Length: 216
Figure (cartoon, rainbow, N blue to C red):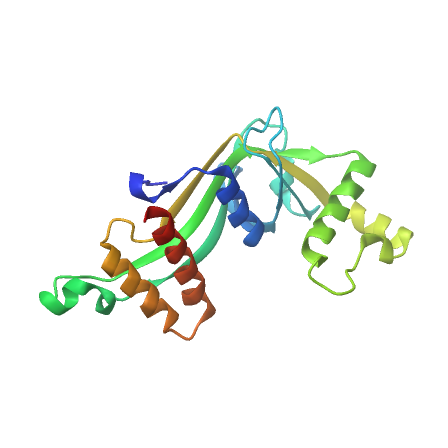
């Protein structure tokens, strides 16, 4: 990933927070000599001995051939897309002076790399499924749990999916939040984004405002 220094984000807690907030990854791997992308939600576990940046855990359909490369030692790339929105030239201070400005697009993204391995132990797999459902159900007043479904039904469903883990060996974050622009321009961009009527613009405004706060 092209990474100008002023856009680089290396803090693990910040990278993990984006993954937790935007868990649907584009999992890119090599399949039969061609790059394939699958869109799979993951949860991130703390760093381990063989995973200095955490362990990504999820599952795929057994009919999906992506899991057949597990154990090959070949790294997969997982892309987690955070806040993103268009930046209009009208929000630049220079627009009023000379008009010498152009649009851009700002975003926050995390790239994680690591080899895929299978979760083959049945109890470990069930524990993974419990962790996944608990992670996504916590916000409900009465969270659904795997144990709410009949045991024989869960057993059948488990035969139709495959648990996977990816120990993260390399991770990078890019927060393109106009850090190379003036403070006045960045404040104006945040105001402009907050004036839009879509959640994506407001989410990016929050990211840019946090970046402003950290650099002041």
